[in-house]
Length: 254
Length: 111
Image (cartoon, rainbow over all chains, first blue to last red):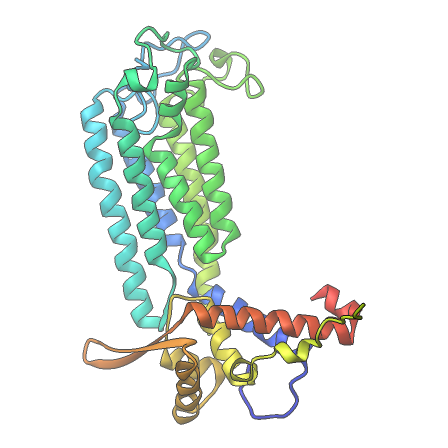
């Protein structure tokens, strides 16, 4: 919209100009490729939390992982629950701080500041909520120690544990970011990432949805934690690869 | 029995917002948390003086907040849309759509 004091102010033309200005500003304000990259790398960095990260079942999904407190690392099967908890308690605030700092500096350079405070604030709040749920003792969530290793979760408590993991908190934060930046790419990446995490956690190690493959032994990929984490981080990194050049093109057209 | 007809949408247009340049300023501010003075000036191809005049009008109507600060040693002026500014812009756009709809129903339903 080139502002002139022309008397011609046809409503349809004004509406079209406003829509074009809003769309142009929205494109230039977007910077979600960095959070996608940061959380994609963070997901990769969580692989060492699983000592048997590349283990696959010999037959029909028999793992010996314990289901009682299995999701603190993000997926079941982490050896040290304390180590996994410490990893996320440090990594999440650091990751959000990196995003905040980057958005802040970028805004100062470009003169255009997105609503990154909403994203960072809500993202950290969602993570804090996940931490609180994970602090709840097993008896509160009705998680029974006798839940068979390698079998699908059968109690509500295990379902809750499977849903409230750090990886789901990352996905929920990215949904907020997609809303803040009105970005379909970020929304798609966040929903696929979150959806896959829930599917993997709901079915447990060594198990896969029946619609995917009936016997893991014949499809040994995508059943070990590292395979899942590579797939999940790949979703976010692919989102970053798609969103990055789009943001740069928008900036060049400025 | 009264034969009440809805008021013509032209009565809903806000004089402060309807002005073309101010509409452009609000449209930009709607999509960001804060926007720097220079960005709006360049995007709308305005002079400093012209933009300042429109910003003063919008600030007096409490539609925007103007905050002055520094980036390093460079003075910067940041603009933020207020809640009432957002509502005013949304109302204005709804009125414009209603007007288009009234003038050309086919075009209005498409926009």
